[in-house]
Length: 301
Image (cartoon, rainbow, N blue to C red; front, side):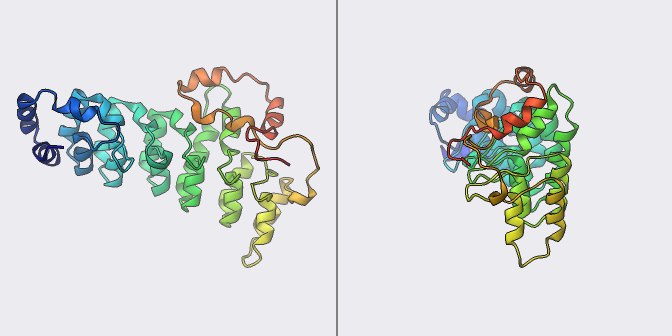
């Protein structure tokens, strides 16, 4: 990028921007032609130059989804630099920027979960509910991320939001999300067990998550708890047993594949939340059976 344009972006100098456009009317178009590039919007977002960023959004809306060479969108850069007000202003123009994924498949909701920013989490879920569907390149949901980073308040907020959701087939959606498996085959219940988080486990069991899913190592949540002999986890063990949890060796053998049809096309959803949910019309008794079926052939009993 021309250093004059970079300076204008960092300083939020809109007059200088239009002077450069007058000299070269295609200056922004040339930047837009590059797939991965640091745009003036990236620079303004990182610097907290809100007015300049909004001007750039008007001139080049496509910049809002551009990834920098490091894999960050302007919104993610603003969050990394604690430019919260600028984030809100950008989302006021395009709420679906909450779903814009960058490096590692992280979207702004994921980053808010990772850092425990409850205010932004609440706002993101309000303006863009479908962002909860997105998973990272490690197949992690926002719940996985919050729990792995010890952000219990963020985890509770996300689980509570799913439980309070009132859209069509919300119970199916809650079950689908809370039983999602990351690339290691771990559900959030596995994570709660491995992190020795009884409160998180209690919230999940209140949601009646599936307690006998096995991860890629062949462990159920109860197996993980029982392996942790160096900590006092009797409370967690009792909670799991009351919920019907079994060790992997105690599970009945079955020729059918394990786990959920939940993940089959989860990351491919691009339409709005309501049309998606309206297509999910299976009766509630069928949910448990669908969840135990496999969408990932590598997870077999």
